[in-house]
Image (tube, rainbow, N blue to C red; front, side):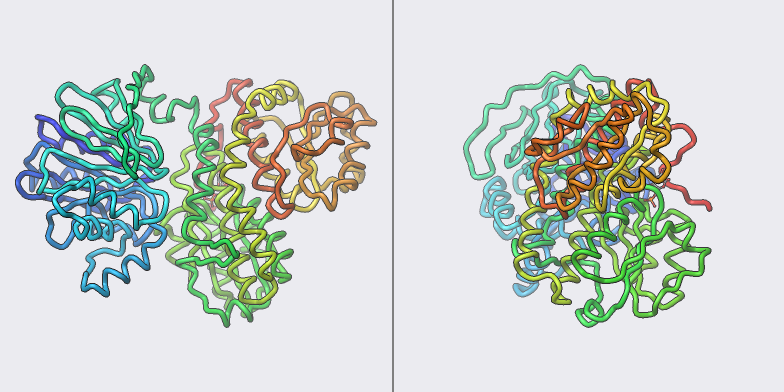
Length: 607
Ligand code: G6P
């Protein structure tokens, strides 16, 4: 996720900006840059680590006391010097940095090109610099307002112009922005840790607000106008806590980022009728209509996302779909048709086994689609098509938000293909689109059930073994819930289809054995309840994940974790969140290193 810095005050801006950007490194980035005004606007930027930018600033210093800076995590356009922020308008009088995505970037760019504008970079950001400059008529604040009225999406935008020195104007639409209040100097940043060593007094810019920053402080207004009286927040956190946004662990922070992640993954890609536009999925309609089988390959959590994908594709597309662990597929001589599509799923895009399986699929003539979170990763470079998940950097080893984004991306892919093949009619497409649009609010609601989840965690914390069951999509979610629990709590756990329990594992269910059942699939509800009855009859302790209006489940379950009612097809998205939180709370009670579990690595780049 990009990092933003701004400074207005009496000191030289460049070193302060650079220092702030270093403190935002934990957010992940692939290039960095700063711009300073001093009569003119000067920009220095470089692909790669901040040290490269620092070298550039050493050899070619920037003088001036007002500036903006940025670390970029590529979304539109590969990581490069040119695509790095800041970006200026053609006159070089206006300069911007931005975090997030401009959804209608393509149409805005075309409009501007028709008016004769040329662009240096492939970014959506550069368009904003052009837009602000075009709208400028002596008032930067008004120009920024007019520009953002045209730019749809979830983003934070920071603008500076040599025409109004001493001032930075910024806007927040979802992507975070804070103001640090110093003594005769003011800081702007995407996150508190950037400036926590310089001030402890902050103004939080909320969604839908604009802020004008000067050395005397900041004025916050609604984007549409109207001054807001924001209370100063005094922060006592230490730097490490601040990086985690006040959460105790990155995993918890990332779980809480999920509503915003769902919004980002969907942004600009889906209309209300279920038509999906996937910018880097290049195959044409003919391919979408004609391919005859789908392969999904991945490892770990990404594999579990693929299990959900298999069911989505099977149900929506009626295409034979195989999902294989990449480390198995690479050696099991898979019978891949040359008319197939292979979807390789990988958060990092660098997992060695996944790369090997993806290459094998390509060798056998399959078209390769990379579903990944990291722009420019090896997998994305080798693929024919790319579907970026846009979850932002994930720091906790146990994956949460990246998994959720992988699910959302697969719904989008299924809609894209299904509409072309004519197997997803308007009604169904509209229903899925509507369900997807509800998800950010539903996931948000789930994050506020900490007390029920803590109680469920207490109920299993001392167990020796925990079992997860479900049918269909619920089984896929059960697999991920079980993996989360074992990764960070080190409790032994196993997931299985509910119907499989009686074929062996039931022998292990005795008085008090925890069994977690996922129950979002209404068509299979009664069947799954039969398995729950078998558990209950042996004294097992049942914890159910069930819809909020399920009025039967309390008869069978020891505890119930409620999820908002959703279309069965979208059930997994809501159901996984309580399981992530459950794993988190069990691990916390057991006192483990949650973000860095023993023996595990975030990205496994060796076989
Ligand atoms: C490692 C991580 C897992 C991850 C898996 C696949 O095992 O610990 O959390 O799911 O790799 O990683 P990828 O980057 O390919 O999604």
